Amino acid sequence: MARSLTRIHFQVLLTLLLCLAAAGYAGYLAVRDLQQSSYQQKAAQTARAASDRVTEVLAQQRQALEKLAHQPGVAGLLSHGTPADRERKTDEFKSILANETAVYLIPRNSDGTLLSTEGLDPACLDFLRRASVAGAPAAPEFHAIGTAAEHYDIAVTVPDENRKPAGYLLASFTRAPLLSGIEKSLPPGGYMELQQPSADDQSQAVIALGQVANAQGASVASALGDSHWTLLYQSGDVPPAIFAGNRIYYVGFILFILLVIVVVLFRLYRQTISAVRHDIRSLIRMFRDLREGSVRVDYPMALREFSEIFDYLRDRGQKLVEEKQKLKDMGLMDHLSQLGNRRHFEERLKELFEASKANGPSSVLMIDMDHFKKVNDVHGHDAGDALIVGFANALRKVVRQNDVLARLGGDEFCIIYTYAPLQTAKNLVERLRRQLPREISLTKGVMHQLRWTGGLSAMHDKDTKPDDVLWRADQALLQAKEAGRNVTKVYDPTAGLPEKKRVIVS
Image (tube, rainbow, N blue to C red; front, side, top):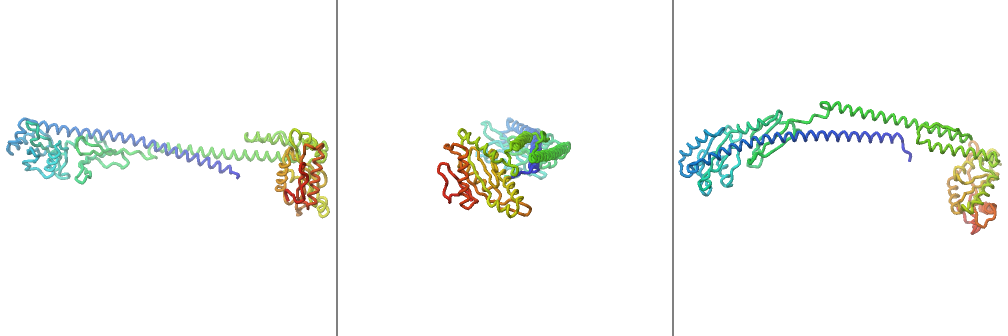
């Protein structure tokens, strides 16, 4: 199936454009990922700095409470002191601590039961009970979130002389220390949020600073020390749009490159089409000259890839012209059919017979056109000549180039299948039957149904002269005529002539 050069060029162009588009998009994704990675790293550094500041504030406050809890006499106040004594001590602690809202000394029994919990709100009491049951330092916790009494509590254990818990020192602080630590780490355009898990395991925002950033900004969450809090930071840095800033120039440059590629490929396509057409015209001129019997020395070619093949065709054509002229000069060419004549046929048959001992046998096919005399009688000799010329041209198109094709006279033709044994020659005759036209134009408006009869034989080792194979082919031809014509009979030099019913093609 023939392929269109235009389609091939279009496919190449489309494939190239798709590859460039894919490469450009992949590059854009790579740059965007690098930017996002950079923003993510920057956001992680910011969140880490804020987390460190808040963790430092909590650590300082817990250390201060533990220092107070280990003062001499504090454990005794919890075991033997009166509520008034404990109140005076907490007032002393208040003067030492900063940003506190309340301080409590809460005694406990050996079984962990809390005593003297007056003044504690339910949330703080539940906070202490959970710390007492856990038997470990309680993580800081916000209470009364969203109200004027909002605070966060830190509780430390007050040990007795046996280092067993005598009670707890509980301090409530405002959000000011934590807020200060977060604000110092918040960059412009960022958003930071301190979250605390609620009773239903849902995170609740306690402190929120900055404006909610774009959803495309980098977001980082980090835990705060030994607390249950989580610090969420969202960067305000958003990767610029693809056409923002200098990118518009980059995109424009890429589009310009694509346009240049399209123009160059289109120009290449036009040049290719023009060169192919030029070379085809040169080829047509050469065949026209060959038909007229003269081949020029130079036929200009535009494509170097065609030059070698073209030179070969020109050289072969020149040789054919020379051989044709040589045959004419030697009187070996039939003037009407432009095929070899009987003299040429006999010389070639003799040459092939002598070479059969070394190169193998050749086969001979004798052909008679059926009803040739009727054509001359009905339509005239001009029509008969046209039939001879048309049949010769048809044979020339089917017969192999190295075979010998000759007109022996009248309507009698002969083909020598060079170095072809009998079975090979049979196949060639069958192909001849299939490929020859069914009709040949004689004169304007007059078509003649082409029928021909053949006799085939091959050279044999016992043959003493070339005429032996010719005689057998002639005998096969006579039997074919007796069988009703339009058939081919074969004379096998070993088996002899077949019976009349044996016909290879009809």
